[in-house]
Image 1 (tube, rainbow, N blue to C red):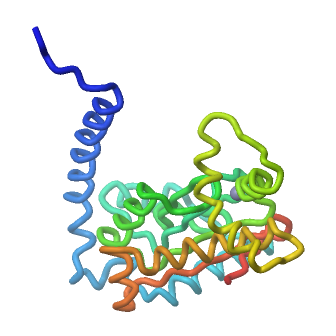
Image 2 (cartoon, helix red, strand yellow):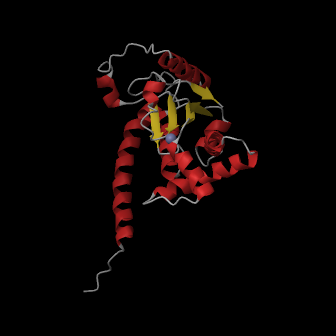
Image 3 (cartoon, rainbow, N blue to C red):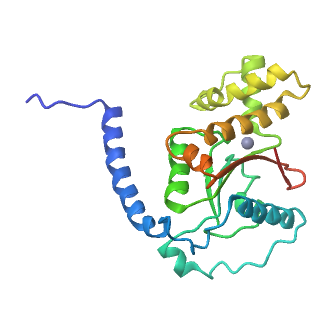
Amino acid sequence: MCNPVLPSASRRQLLFAGAASLTLAGLVHDETRAAAPADVNAPNAITPDEALTRLMDGNARYAANAPSNKDYSAGRASRVMAQYPIAAIVGCADSRVAPELAFDQGPGDIFVVRVAGNFVNEDGLASLEYGVKFLQVPLIIVLGHTHCGAVSATVDAIQKGVVLPGHLPDLVHSIKPAVAIAQLHGDADLKASATIENVRLNANRLSVSKPIIGQYVKEGKVKVVGGIYDLATGKVNLL
Ligand SMILES: [Zn+2]
C-alpha cells in the first residue's frame, strides 16, 4: 500500500543511468579490443602533432574548395567493427560549422562533441574521456567560430540584461566565465574576444581535467588545442 514513489526526476535518472550503463558497457566491451595500449598498429596510433597536421591539411583543402575525393561506402563494413578517430572536436551546434567537412575528413575519422557555445560540461567531458581512453584519440580540438550566436547571446545577457526563454539561460551560465575574462581584457570587440577566451578556457580545463584526460596530456599521449573557425573563409586559425 505504501510503495515508495520516486519523484519523476529521480525515476528518470535511474532509468537513464540503467540504460546508459548497459549501453556504455557494450561500447566499452566492443571498443577495448581496438583501444588496447598494445595496439600500436591501429589506424589512429599516430602522434598528436601528426593528427593536427592531417586536420589542418584537410582544412586547407576545404578552404580552397578542393576536398579529397571520398568514397563513403568504402570502409563501411570495417567501421561496423570498430572506430579509429584521429581527433576529437568540441564544436558548436551551429549548422554552418560542420567539423567533418571543415577538416575534410570522412566517417570514422573524427569524434565530435557538439553543443551551442562549444563548452565542455560533464556529459561532454565523459564523451571525450571515452574517446581518449577507449578509442585512443590523440588530439582534441576545442573549435569556436566567428559570429557565434551562443557567445553573442551571452554577451547580450550580461550587457543588456536580456533574459532568454526555456533552458537557454543554462547555456549563458556556461559561457559567462569566458565573457568575464574577455571583459577584463577590454577589447573593443567583446564578442570576438569572448569567443577566443571561451575556447582557451575550455581547452585549458580539458588539459588538466581529472582523472583521465589530464593524465594523458601529462604523458604526452594527447594534445588539446584551441581553434577558431572563420565562417567567411572556412579557415581554422589555431590559438
Ligand atoms: Zn556558435
